[in-house]
Length: 222
Image (cartoon, rainbow, N blue to C red; front, side, top):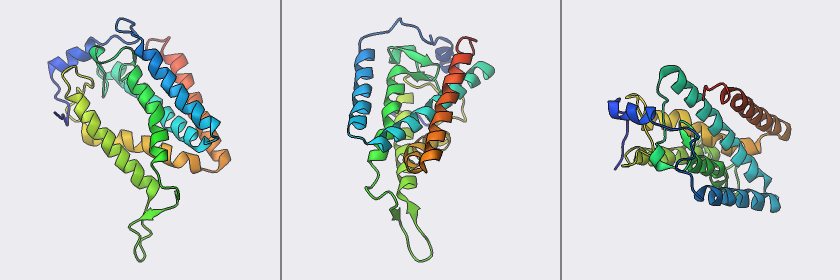
């Protein structure tokens, strides 16, 4: 039911070699429905003037894209990315490690994580004596990262190979530490940054994403 590490098998390598990035062969109308849901969520938050939630969503989603671009570059350089999605598990593959459904989920994950924080985001847990405790934002990021890492281990074990891990040293633990923790740190901390610093972070983050996509996709790198 769960898979915790890549197995380095020839079967896994063959699955990666067979991936058709940005092919419309499996395209269907769920693509449009999912996009409509994402638009509804963001515009609902904007209508309510809950801009902090929007910033949280954009912060995590930008980090997600930077990770996916790096993963695709790793795949191009070494032959295999750290993670991949299979043709059979999706309607459309954006980059070798991310499909449309997964990407749209990550566009909402930051909003979800941020809304799960206490109303008082300065709250700290386990404070005692000289120990100031752990920030609720840090604790929330760790909890969400653990949940997502465990769910990814489930996806890696599915019959249609929703997630493919090739390298034997890549699995739940590195996914949790190096990928999901930074994702949710972004969503939980960026909205409370000073306004100028927050805006600069989001502008630079998304400008870098756009620049890399504009250069690397036509160049055939990703």
